[in-house]
Image 1: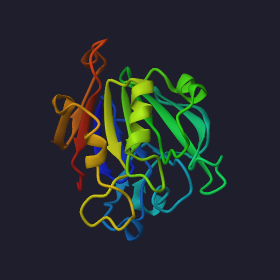
Image 2: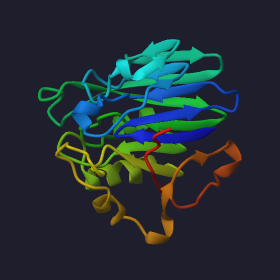
Image 3: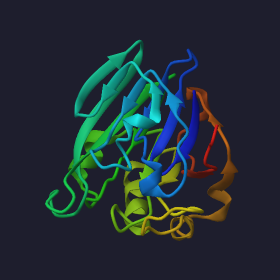
Image 4: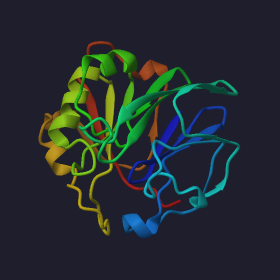
Length: 218
């Protein structure tokens, strides 16, 4: 399978069969940088905020998933789990859907705009995870330290940070640097345009690797 980061919390996940999942398309007017119209078989929306539910930015799709539950689409398995956008049981920013995808034998977990503190109950529902996509910018979501706690508890093989400040971003969120400082530099790979994975890439017992992706504009 292949992973491309389109910016903010939006990823294009493509299985070896060619089937694709698009996560959290965003309104460029809200985020501050562009969003090229995408095509995908499935679109997932973690919550109804304009920087995560911009369906006008999707040129074509067959299925929309925006609620919790279990789904299957031509061999792609998706599970949605409830969580909160803040640490006050959703009273500030509402609820948030976490999605786990099973593609080519790889387990990918997209945390959406997770804002609640890490809990044993939530961790138990989400494990195991091969690839964790997690916000690290703080303010509207967990910050770098809280994101690191999720990484330490979920123990993914790979973590890809998202929802952080990059060039032209107009949101009041932190850059990725604060998150990266919490890891050994030997475990960090930066400037990745596209990540290609299959189940054989994951060795038990190795350290979590941090992959910082370049925003794809194609």
